[in-house]
Structures are given as structure tokens and as C-alpha cells.
Amino acid sequence: MFLSVRSMRLAYSVSLVALLAGLAACGGETATAPEGDATDTASTEAGSDLSGTIAVDGSSTVFPISEAMAEEFQRANPDVQITVGASGTGGGFEKFCNGETQISDASREVKPEEIANCEANGIEMIELPVATDALTVVVNPENDWAQCLTIEQLNTVWAPEAEGTVDNWNQVDPSFPDAPLVLYGPGTDSGTFDYFTEIVNGEEGASRSDYTASEDDNVLVQGVVGDTNALGYFGYAYYFENQDSVKAVAVDAGSGCVEPTEENVLDGTYEPLSRPLRIYVSKQAMEENEAVKAFVDFYLDPANKELVAGTGYVPLADDQYSEAQTKFESGEVKTAE
Image 1: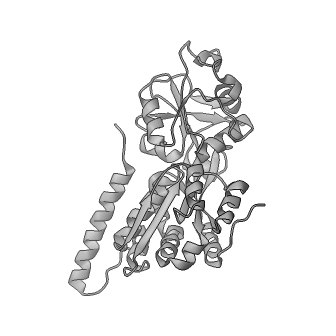
Image 2 (image 1 turned 45 degrees about the horizontal axis):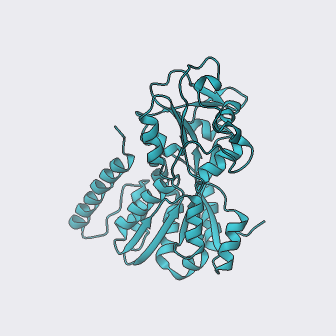
Image 3 (image 1 turned 135 degrees about the vertical axis):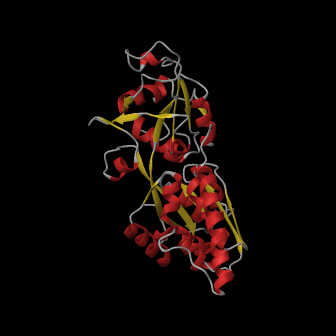
């Protein structure tokens, strides 16, 4: 059974909105949420007279954060319609540079050629960090042998030369059972794929291709759940929501086995699979669409970082959100370096 953090968050938010509505009716004045609650910002700072449409697409890893932010923002601004897609980081940039979206979710940094594509279409982008991810390697709960894998072992599994040759668990480690190795991972449009292959295989995009690939991380989760011999990888939020159905593997980068946890991300020990998550905002849309600016302000407000934590990702420090807000306000454009 898959857990649903989104459902729990939605139930909480509906209850809170109902409570605030009741308080407003009794007092005759605008009600505010309890101090420190993320919904406080949505209720008081986002203008209820806002209207318009916002299209967000890109990374399936960042999708849960943008979805949570969009739900809460629209709750306070019902005349703003926000759609959030998950076509992968690469697919998201294609739509963004074609002017189909105003915000692009990304689990890797934008590539110079993607910036050039946007510039050719007259689109300037503002790069903003929003959270930190612990990219997670997972196995089926029945797997009692792969408790920890080294980067070298992950390379043995996922390197291009492993295609058609490494197909048994005992080829990864002789102590592992004689059992078929069944692999699930992101597709080539995914920023997670790009990041993982660069870290594990030494070159972005260098990977075996004989595995079940999908830009939909839920498909990967279900694949691992359905096969005792499966191994896969995806963003931490999808492990967080399904941790009763899949098991995280500790990673040894040379200093011992480290599990993907918030504590290990914050203290820097879950390396090298910790990574920043970003959104890219169209500068033109920010300047011309009041709803876009208000939504991004909401997204970067430290008061709303519990929405990030609710998805399983690690929020940034308050001063990092403030720095991002300053960058956004100044309209600092990302250029090819």
C-alpha cells in the first residue's frame, strides 16, 4: 500500500481553512493562521484579488514541492489556476524555452545549450534554489542482502559496459545470492538520470539502457515493489511516501555506509548523492504576470518551508531562501558560463 503525504497535507489544509473561515465569520475581520504555520503566508500575504494562469513543468523530483506550493497558493487565491506537470527536467526546459510554461522544475542545473535555446526564443531565466534532495537507491523489502552499496558497486550495475553482461546480483558482490538483477530508473529526459550517471559512472548520460525507464517515479516505485530482485533509484520524496513498500540502501562513498536521511544531508555525510533542487522562472513572465511573481514569492517564503519538509525533501536555511528572494527581486538572469 502506498502512503500519500499529499493526502494528509490536503486534509490538514482543508481543516485549517475551515477553521479560519469560522474565525473570520465570528470576528468580522480577516483571520490569520497560527503564528509560524505555513498557511499563514498564504492567507495574509498572497493577494486574494489575484487572477491568471501559471504553467509549471519539468522534474518529477521537484514535482511534489511545486504541487504542494500550488495547492496552498490556489487555496488562498482561487482565481489563479496553476498546472504542474512532470515531463522530466529536459522535457520541462523544452517547454519553458518554447514559451509554453512560466516556471521550470529542475533536479539539475540548466545546460548551456538549453540557455541558448531559451535565448534564441527571447526567454530569459532566473535560477532559484528551493530544496535539497537525497537521491535514493532502493530495493524490495524482501531483499536482505543489499543493505549498503559502494559507489563502485553502483557503477558495476549501471555503467554502459554492464549492459547485457551484469544481470545477476552475485556479479555485484560474490556474497550476494544467485538471483536476477532487475533494474528500474529514470528516463534520459530526467535530471535525476543526468545527475546519477555523472556521479556514479563519471559522465552525464553514460548508462546501460537495458532497464525499465520512466520519467514517472511512481512507475519506478511500483516496479521495485513488485519484484524481490529489483533495484532502482529516484528522488527522496518518492521513497519518503512509500517507505513501507520499498527499502532504502545505504551508500558508501569511501567513508562507510550512510543512509539517506535529513540529518545526513544537513551534516554533509550523505555524499555524493545529495543535490540541490531548483526552479527556473521566466523573467518576462515575472515582470508581466503579477500572479507568477506572487506565486514565486510564496514559494521562496521561509514561512512555507514546511511544505517542502512535508514532501520529504530538506528545506533550505532561512537565509538561503532570503538570498533566493533577493535574486528573484533583482531579476538576475542565468547565462551560459
